[in-house]
Amino acid sequence: MSEKMKEVPGIYLRDAELKAKDAITFKWRPNAKYVWAGGIAYSRYLEELKNGRIIGRHCSECERILVPPRMFCDKCFRATDEWVYVKDTGTINTYSVSYLDADANRIKEPILVAVIELDGASEGIGILHYVDPKVDPKDLHVGMRLKAVWKPEKERTGSVTDIAYFEPIKEG
Ligand SMILES: [Zn+2]
Image (cartoon, rainbow, N blue to C red; front, top):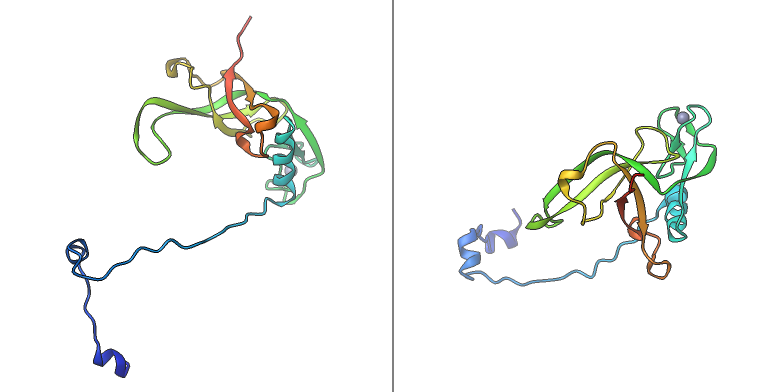
C-alpha cells in the first residue's frame, strides 16, 4: 500500500449509498467513434446490395456458393475462386416469431425473422433477414418461398437492410 493510500484509505461503496447520493457521482459520455472494415468479400457484398444485387463466392473444390461471400472456404481451407450472383428469392430454412424487440421489451406485433436459403446459393447456406410483418405468424413454415422487397434505390446505403424484408411468393 502506498503512503498516499494509507493516508486516505477510502471505503467500498454500497449500492444504497450511491442511490442515496451519499457519494459524489458524475455522468460521462465518452466520445467514442468506431470504424469497421468489411474486408474484400463483405465490402463487395454490401456494395452490390446497394445496386439491388446479391453476390456470393464460389469454391471450385467443394462446388459450394457462399452467401454472404467469403474469400476463404471454411470447408476446404483454401481461397474461394470466383464471384457469382444469386437470386433475391429463396426458401425458409428456419424462422423465429419474436415478441421481444431488440432491447428485450415486450411487443404486441411480433417481429418475424428467418434464415433464407437464396436460390443459387448452396443448400444449408442462408442469410438471416426479416419477413414481411403483414404475414400471419401461423402461416410461416420451413420451405416457404420468399422474395426480397428492396428499399427504393435512393434509400439504399450499402447495408443488409437495403432489403427491407422478404415477402411470400404467391403460388399459382
Ligand atoms: Zn470449398
